[in-house]
Image (cartoon, rainbow, N blue to C red; front, side):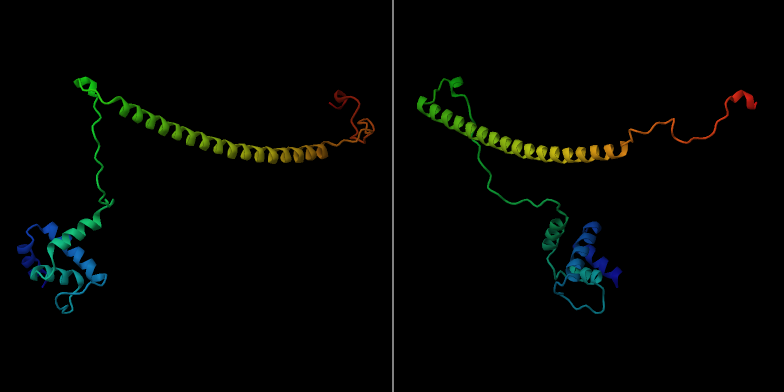
Length: 181
């Protein structure tokens, strides 16, 4: 039955690769719970999808749109495009802009630049303060570690001052090494 269904579908969708994509998308929709437009007749979802395409009970344009939507990695949101006016130096063309307008524009630009610089300086100061606190904490931890290390070293190196190595019992050594040979 599937071969007959495919032959019927090729009449509706001449490209077999596109037919496979559309039928697979419709089969996924059926699996996810979309209502059937024809009787199932104990057929599996891909066969039902092919029969629906052959009988034209589903919209091919709708299936194509859902295939494209399913394969998109980045969904674009329609936003109104901003119109950018060309800023031309009108003095090149012999037309001068009113002097008052240029002064106002320059003042606005300077204010924006100052605001941006102030924000950057504030961010840098905050980062420096955070860094200083982190450095102080690290220094305190290192100082504690050094104190502990010094105490440990002192404990390990404590030596009795009154001990004379000549007084310690040692191995009896022969008087002359050459005599034994």
